[in-house]
Image 1: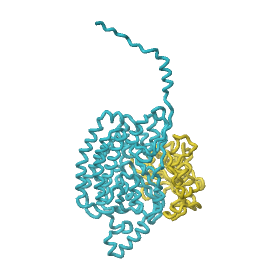
Image 2: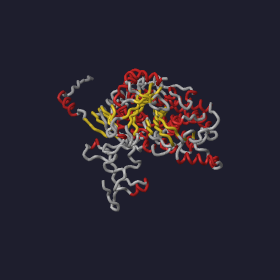
Image 3: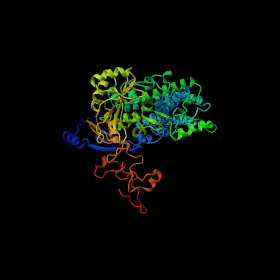
Image 4: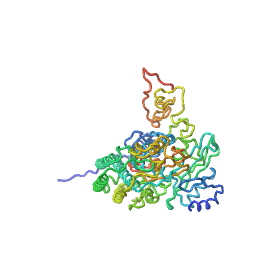
Length: 413
Length: 206
């Protein structure tokens, strides 16, 4: 049996290919992405100019969640503004509450008791874990890995149970008051926090085993959305996004506040500044947060949980109001006219889950700020989009947005 | 101590530099024209490598100078901040030099300050509103802007009941969620349905 091999020759395709190239020439497209798009995590709109699938220009449009928080702050007392800070980075309200209270206490030159500081450290770090869990879950879901989202949301739910037990609310905690916190930790709460930490660590390992050496995850995130060190600093990036680019800045360590200098922790850094590094930094940060929480609970000092000496700043406890005339008057004054603040101006930044949340307070004395500027880290983190998304594929946009992990609440304020 | 060192060093490039009252970080008052030079020197010679915050203060309707621009810089080596403030010369049309050439982060922060205070940043490449919509006529963080908005002859009873001020609601047409019909479709903002009027309730005057 003879095998006859016929050589396949393609029909003369030269002319056709040229025609096809003409025909399939990539098209210039203008796409409006958002403001209600799953991967924009809120109400962000991107005006994209595309060449085929390649992004040529990206113009973020903000302001859909603008509530005028700074104007509102000028019209109410310092304590009344605490609930508004919940709604800045609404994924980590406890951290915002603490940052705001510390900024005003800095204005009042008020030192809060050690127990209050330790409580704030614990709550801020738990808020960081919850924010990173959500950020990570949403990020991976945008890229297509659904399982991680299930794991992180289950863990986050446990955290919200703890928050509810501590503050009475899951989301809008309003836990801080100027000069302290609203209430002490309930009995046995620290043990439950430690149990949570115990359960979290193996699950973080699970998450990492799902992602860190996952080929698809690697392809979708490595070398995508690279932010150089210089760019990261120039665009005012802070938090995990800055450290993902390898810039060694962490305000908890560099400008310690609320007793962070007593705790040992490492500051994880990325190397390339791509989406993968930002993911890796966040996972490691959660482990470090667990470390801080454990140390803080181990060392938890006794004593009052609010500044007892600051009688014109922290409203007295209810039992004292009802029995003492002096306390009743104080409570009335603090509630109606606000805490007694000196004139002057301060700027305070706290290392929040998304980056450095800054409060610039100008006071002319009295209980109401004259001007309060809120520096939302997401605002600056987003401003790099116009640079980092150019040249990326449109499908990478969701990876980049997920890795920047922004919250529109503090971006639009 | 850092404040004194900095001040003597900065005195050479800007002799008019003046101490500013501050409860925390070193703070300087600087003539608005030389802010860019001072910031450049701070960045290049003193290690203040990040512009954390750029904003403004309205000192009151009657005050003169009315507007003050304020900058906060951070040094990641020295772990310290510095505050720089400059009074805008003109109260009617306040302006300040743009720092976009020095710090990219100034781009959005100056856009926000322009949006909220109406301060014109000279040399800014793209000075558009950022938080309010483009056609918005006011600068809301100015002290003469009322909290609930300006009173209007065609006020809305429902809103007035809630706010105590005779104001109109944010417009459904021409507002942030409504498209300009003249613009190409992809550039338009997605539109909300105008449900502010029905057969029972008259369409309000736009």
